[in-house]
Every structure is written in structure tokens, then in C-alpha cells.
Length: 354
Length: 275
Ligand SMILES: Nc1ncnc2c1ncn2[C@@H]1O[C@H](COP(=O)(O)OP(=O)(O)O)[C@@H](O)[C@H]1O
Ligand SMILES: [Mg+2]
Image (cartoon, rainbow over all chains, first blue to last red; front, side):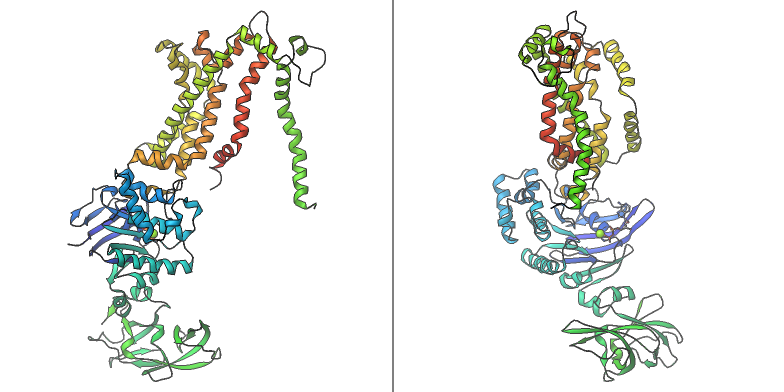
């Protein structure tokens, strides 16, 4: 039995369809990340699981029980918001224990749970403070603490790190991942940041315009995307897309060259396709097989690696990622190459051809 | 160091100071008159410095009308009025801010519309209703309840509830905190500055209310302080010094309250203005 299951869930706000039939089963103990561009319906989907929004169609199950008509407070979930959503007039201690106390838990038990959560999150020195006396990262830890004390069936996170600065975001990312391992709890985590999705998830669910584009293990989405959208969304720097033309001999014409793709079925000739190549799949020189010429516009040196911005002979832009420091002359042309097996081929509708 | 900033401040205060004096002058003369013997008030010149007859004037006042009792009644009525009115207006404001229901916009519109009605248009029908139709003149109920109708307070509270962050209440719902408890333990404390400002406004409203208590009550033992003071003016021998003492005693607590709470008051009023 899945911890949380969605069956053809739909949501409309008036005439606007926001979620268009989502089927999903999240296993107990899984860390599931909903990722997608802003406005694709991630929050709406999460809020329907929480019960904060009614579903327009379909069913939501929590541990096998249909909860469509169950109040949020009776779903035994916990939610962490981007804005922290702490009770501003209560101390950290009170913030964490308030919900339990309001639900009739004995004072001693509340204190015990708050102490446990505070220990897990290193919040003990802050227990007597008000939210206004905390930094953003501390506030979000309190919000997570408030979720932990509930011993919920699942944790729901809605972009919890988006208000934090970059360094803190990395740190909290690690903390939440550790917490997941420590608690073994089911977690659903919403983010628009594919780095968070890649690094934290057991499973990523990519959403676009209210439908699931693809779901699976992070590395599977990275290596084996079903469509151009997922391929472009997952991975940083982004995948390069080039125009390709199927030729009668089964090869694909790309800029000044042609290569034999790793496809099991052959699309019709003269068909336009899109060739996807990740920036790290290019070699400098011709060793990798399919040779191209790149004109360099700019090199961003990050120290450990460098990102080359340039153009093919066809004028199409591309990014190449290399290890180490490089300062090739701008405007110069360099030979580059890639292995045919690394190229992903997409049809005109964006679907992957395999 | 004389900077452009201090220059501006000086110029500003050069304008503010005379204005402040214009406002303060009547208050000062009221205080001065309260300390003058009756013949001093109507003397040839205008007295600008206090004298020593305050206690005598107060004795005269207490002799003409039981002013201490009237003050107690005013305090009691204003306190009860404020408590009930804050409770009602904040609940109504919360309902209008948080719940979507059919006709909500219409309700808000009607409440808003009543603000434009002058009090004097409302007070006569209200009086006829209470005194004639309900036959409730001269009762505590009539003294306190009809003025509770306060659309400004409802809109004031609605506005401040609307500005609270939505997600805090989502968090409360997920935690299973009921609607009443969310209101009392989360929404109300979060609007404390507005509540404080509203309480002061409502208290003042009741404290200064002259027309309604005058109309609805004719029993001397239920007179509020402003009505008691007003009733003195018709007497054959008017003790103006006594009336001035009454005015000072009526005004002083409000002044003290306002000065003490000024900061919260202004924070509450402008809470709607700055986001
Ligand atoms: N309460 C609402 N009323 C109307 N439209 C809404 C409401 N909430 C969200 N939407 C719309 O639904 C879409 C998805 O929103 P949301 O789930 O918040 O996206 P995401 O979290 O992925 O950025 C957006 O286009 C948004 O404008
Ligand atoms: Mg969102």
C-alpha cells in the first residue's frame, strides 16, 4: 500500500484548468520531489494532498484511505511553507508545541516531543525566542521542527528553501536529506530548482502545465529523459538542442556533419528532429567520434571547471563544459566532438525517439 | 553640525509649533478656568495663569450633580461598550476577511455604505425604535447596545485581517487547530496594534457620546458624565467653574491615555497604509 496515492486528480480554478489528471503513487519512506517551472501547478497539487484545496476531480488516498472530504487537520500530515508561516507572537517552543496542545495532548508529552525535535535540529538555544529574533534559516528549522513534532504520516514541503540565500540553501538541503534518512519518513518536496530535485530526491516527478511529464530516479531522468522538456529542465548547465535532419541512409545531418544515431527504429527520411547533447558530452579535439567546429564567444572559468559559450558552423548556440581552467582566444574556432551514443533524438513534437 | 537635515527639521517645527499652540490653547484655558473662582472667569481680561479655586469648583460641581457617580457610569458604560464592540467588530471583520460565502461582497458593500450616513440620520430612527417600539428607554441595554452598531470598526478589522499572511492560517489548518482557536490564539494576537487602536477609538466614541445617552435616558441616576455636565447649563445659577472642572476631569484621562499609547495608536492606524 502506498503512503500517498493520487488517481486522475484534476483541479480547476473557475474556468482555468490547473491540474489535468495526475496519477501518482508515493511509497512509504520515499523522498519524492515535484519539480517544474513556476506556475505549473506544483503547489496546487501539494495543497490538494494537504487538503488545503478541494479536488475538482479524481481521488486522493493516504495510506489507503480516501481523504477527498477529510479536513486537513485530520489527515495527519505536516506542511512546511516557503514563508515559514510561523506564529509570530509565540516563542519557538510554543510554535512547535501549539498544534499538539490545541489537539489535547498532555503538557508533558508536548514538552517531550518539542525537546526531541529541538535536539534533532539544534534549536535548544533558541527555544525562548520569537520568530522575529531568528534568521531565515533558523525560522525554517523551527517550521521543520513544528512538522516533526506531529509525527506525521508524511511531510509536505512547499519550496522551503527559496527564501534563503545560496549558501544556506545548500546547507539546509543537506540537513533535510539527513533528516529524511534519520526519520525514514515519507516526504513530498516541491521546488522549481532542479538542483534540489537532483540532489535530494529518491524520485523526481516533473510537472508541466498540470500534467506529469515524467517521473523516476534522478539519474534516470538525467540520462534517459522521455521528452525534450524533461531533458532541458533537468541538468545544469542546460542540455544543448540542435536542429537535425534524417537522411535516407539513416544518419542525422547536424551542422556540417552527419552521424549514425543509436535508434532502434528509423524515422522517415527528411524528417526534422532535435538532437540533444549535454555540455559535458563534448570533447575538445576529434577523439569522441563525431567532429564539429565550435566558434568560441565566451569562456566562464569557475576554477575547477569552465563553461564555453559558442556557436556551431550552422550558427546554433551551444555550451560545452570542461574540467580545469581554459583561456582559449575568443573568436577562435576549435574542433570538438561527441560520441553518437550520447546524442538524444527528439521528434518534432518533442517526444524522445529511441 | 548644521546640516540640510536639521535645517529642514527646524523649518518644519517652525510651522508645527504655532499649529500645536492653536490646538492646545483651548485645552489650556479650560484648565485655567477650572481653577478660577466664578467671578474670575467673567473678569475683564483673559486670565492665562491658573488660580487656586479648583477644589471649590469641584465641590460646587458635586453639589449640583453627582459627578463622581456620573463618571463611574461613564467609565462602566464605555468599558463594557468597548469590550463588546471589539469582540463583535473583530468577529465580523474576521468572517468577512476569511470566509467566502454567497453575498459577501454585498454585505461588505452595505456595511461600507452605512459609513456615509451621518450619525444624526441614524440616531432618530434608532431612538424611536428603542424607546417606542421596544419600550426600552431608560435601560442599561438601551444605553449600551444600540451604539454598538459600528461599521467602521468592522471594516477596520477586516482590513487588518486581510493583510495577515495566508500561509500562517494554512499552517494552522494542517495542524488541526479549529476555527475559533485560530481566531482567538492566532488571528487576534497578530492584529494586536489594530485592536489597541480600535479599542481607544471605541472607548472615546462611547466616552464622548452625548446625544444618545441624552435621548435614551432621563433618569438622573443613570446619567453619563457628559450628560450630567450638560444638564447643569440649564440651572438658574450656573457654576461655570464647576463645569470647567468637569470638562477637565472628562478630558484628562483621554489625554493621558492618548499620549501614553500614541505610538501603538499610530502604528495601528497606519497599519493599513504601509505594507
Ligand atoms: N487560488 C487560486 N485561484 C486562481 N488561480 C490559482 C489559484 N492558485 C493557483 N492558481 C493558478 O494555478 C496555477 C498553478 O499555481 P501553483 O500551483 O501555485 O504553481 P507552482 O507552485 O507550480 O508555481 C497558476 O497559474 C496560478 O495562477
Ligand atoms: Mg508554488
